[in-house]
Length: 246
Image 1 (tube, rainbow, N blue to C red):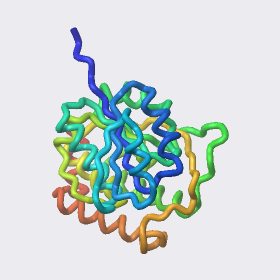
Image 2 (cartoon, helix red, strand yellow):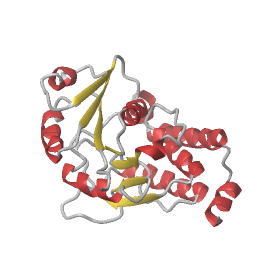
Image 3 (cartoon, rainbow, N blue to C red):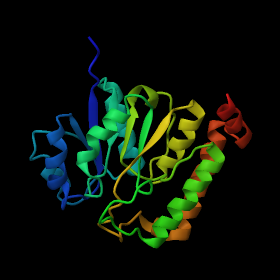
C-alpha cells in the first residue's frame, strides 16, 4: 500500500494578535498538524496561541527574523519526519483553502511557490507600487542569474518536499532569506513550479524593520544578499547555464 505522505502547515508569526485566531480556525480545518513559530512577539500573540490545544507552538525568545522563523519550521518538519511542509503567513493575505492544492502539487516537485502575478483573481488588491517594483526587479534578476522562470520571488505561500530541504544550506534570517533559498535551490538542482494565488494586501504599511522600510535601502539589501549568496554557493552565470543544459 502506498505511503500516505505527512504534511505540516507552518506559520511564522510576529505580532499577529489581530488575525491569529481567525486564520488558525481555518487552517486547522484541513486536518494536518499546524505549527506556529512565534518569533518573539511583543503583543498578545503568544498568550492567544497558548489558549489553543489544536496547534503546535514553538517560540523564539527574541525577534530573530522572518527567515529564522522559517528555518525553525523547516527543522521541525525534518526532525518529525514530515514529507511536505506548507508555509503561509498569518496576516490574512494567504487563503487557507489553497492548502490542498499546494500539497497535491508538491507530490511531484521539490518546491511549489505561490505567485500573485500568474493569474488575475476577481476582486484582488492592487499591490503598493514600490513593493511591486522591487518584486519585479528582483524576480527578473533572479531569473537572469539562476535560469529560473519565476513570476513572484517573494510570496510566502509555499510547499516544500522536506527531503529536498536537507539539500539546502540557508543561513539568512531576515526578509531576504527567500533570495538565498532560491540560490540554494538552483545549486541543488531542485524542481520548482508556481501556483497562482490571489493578490491580497491588507496592510500596505507593513514594516520590514527599521531602515528596510525605505524602498531603495531594501532593494540594495536584497542585492547584497543575492550577491553574497551566489558567491557562497559557488554559482556563476556560466555554471547555472551549464546545469540548465544538462
